[in-house]
Length: 127
Image (tube, rainbow, N blue to C red; front, top):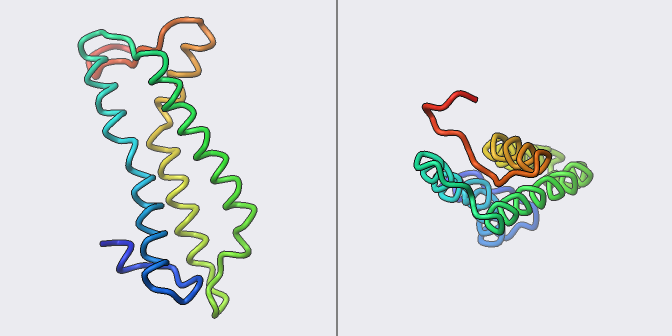
């Protein structure tokens, strides 16, 4: 709904702009179910399977690289009137995704540094 109400107007094709914006918004929140399952596993004191943990970390790293790309392309993300709201929307979506994954990154990097399997804390455990 947000993609249809606030589509950027980059190429003057409404459908293309809405589809691109919908994809970007969906990617920002698509990791939430996986992070929820990690928390559910943590409540039963299970560790995260290494391949899944590495995959989610790679997904987050790709978002970091994508954000660097959009930051370098920010000046090109203006509409025909010179407004830069499109660039702001893109960067906010990228930053939101990184904020959502922030605690996962912390525990992932900590587990790599210590050489231990990834285990997220439970809501009742002390960190």
